[in-house]
Length: 409
Image (tube, rainbow, N blue to C red; front, side, top):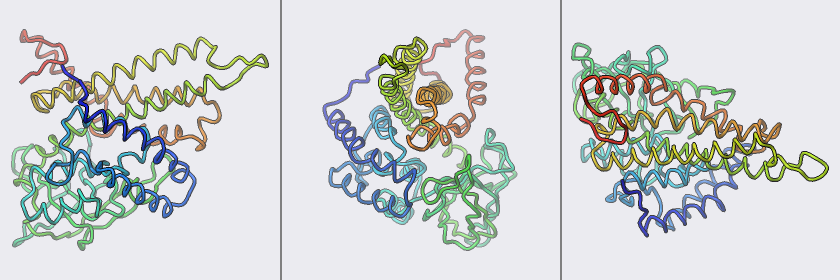
């Protein structure tokens, strides 16, 4: 395993760290307490600065202006940008656009690349990914009620989706719908590109998450497709490839998520330490840092973050080396492990901040609300644990190795 950081990547990370600290984190006050239109203008201004530094959309394909980063390098960058909720957006590599770029780059036709991919990479538009359905279990993606029926040269889409993140203001959706209900379970669904101004596409609402519906990019849309007609030329990949494309999107995407979560955990840890050192609790000047329980939390959190980071970088290294399918055990393990490390770091930081921790005077309460879903989306913890445990037990029974960090067919 080689996680050595190249000189070029060290330079990039140094520039990113400085820009995040000086230019992006200060925008959090506007995000939490200010005006959305003002925040949008500030973000556009910072994005222009990022372009001038030649760091725009660094994870995207080289031929579209990206930096050609491998998965390990992308992971390191995601941690640096994850230190603030605005980091990935300011640098043009936010979800769900980053994942959509990956599958468009691999599966789109030349016409689709020019119409959908190029403006997305250049930051002219945003997109959304429309797969989850309120009536169907997200843990079983082969169960899907949305259909796309052929009619002449078109698909006619009917269905009900929600948690179509960032649908508000998006130019197009990548929709997963059943195109052949009689096919084998993993070949029934396809992915179809649907411009959001298509008749029959309706953003019903931005779903309120723990009291906050939001607007624009930071939202989770409920979407209705009613007789929504698009050309069959908008099919992404082959018919029936929806599940395969989704798996290819979600595997590397979990590296991005996990390293972003580590960025959240690391900043929460730093805030916890700073608060513990400064918060006086006795007239003689004693601070929270003198309490053994705080010292234990600091030690445990530091060790947990370090372990989570190494696990995730190892999974990224394996994806680079053997591909996401062979690294599926490592991908499954980091999904539930890192999410919980991050949530414990945030929770401890809130506790050390006391009453201040549950206010919106720091970023902690924002993360406490919005990141609880980390244990649910892209596969609930329990699903990943069950699938990983089942594979390991089966492998042991057949005499195979069961140690993580080794590729398996």
